[in-house]
Image (cartoon, rainbow, N blue to C red; front, side, top):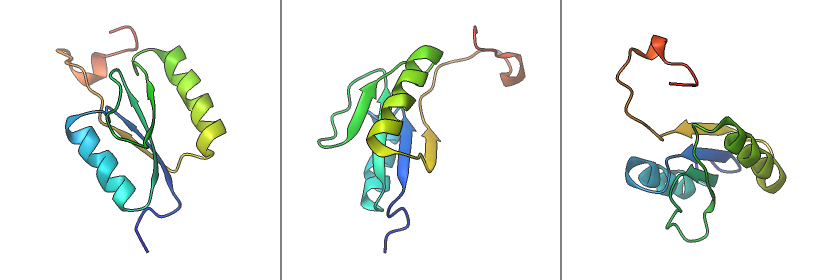
Amino acid sequence: MSRLSGKTAVITGGASGIGAATVRLFEAEGAKVFVLDVQPTAAAGTLSAVCDISDETAVEEAFARIAVELGVVDVLFNCAGIAVRNPIWDVDQDS
């Protein structure tokens, strides 16, 4: 049995790079994966939504869709990133 068999995972930044590699690994381990990224995913058969995770409304809409299509989310892997030049404790939603 695979380690993520029967689990649902949401991966932000999953359309390329480390995020895309994580999508492939999670799927190989049996997870149903939903990708959120600002660029469309190239992974055939993977559920995804073009979503800017810095937009709270877009994220809420994406998770509403995920709830309908996949149900409960068991794993959230945040691989989306932006360059922030301030200490993390000084960053707020408007930064």
